[in-house]
Amino acid sequence: MSMAPEQSKPATADSATQLKDLQSAAASSDTPSATAKMVCGPEILGSVMQSLNLTKAPHTTSSWHNDLFSCTYELPMGTLVLSVQQSKSDAAAGSYFATLRPTLGRTETLIGLGKSAYGTSEGTVVVVKDDKTLRVDATRLPAVFGSNQQKRADYAYEIASDVLGCWTGSDYGAVPVR
Image (cartoon, rainbow, N blue to C red; front, side):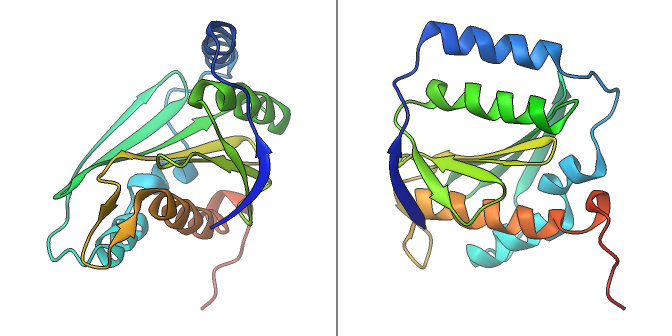
């Protein structure tokens, strides 16, 4: 995982209020996009299973509220939550992305993911791509886990990268290779 030295300011009540306002102002949709639902789809489930050497698929639950699609993976070692905020435009997604950052405490800019990305040492990665903001929250996993002694911050980065790999097709106009 590549981190730049830039850091965010501590969380404030104002940033949390701004974040809720941005979620409320987002273009409301009755259903999540196919892209958002990919975080709970077979490709990401397969990535989670393979990366953790799981022989049985973990229980997952998903929800859709205020244009935020969330998928919770109940893993043997803890909980992993992936969520996608759908915004009405790329600019609105950028605003949401920027407003979310100070609510997470100390963050560092991450290189190599989407248009922009940041993460925490505790195991959260946030990426903005087009009108979507992906959040991978591995904070409810142990600091080090799995048969390969995975660190949760590195794991969040790995899963975010896998999701972005899936996003290359479908809603983004890529033509499937046959």
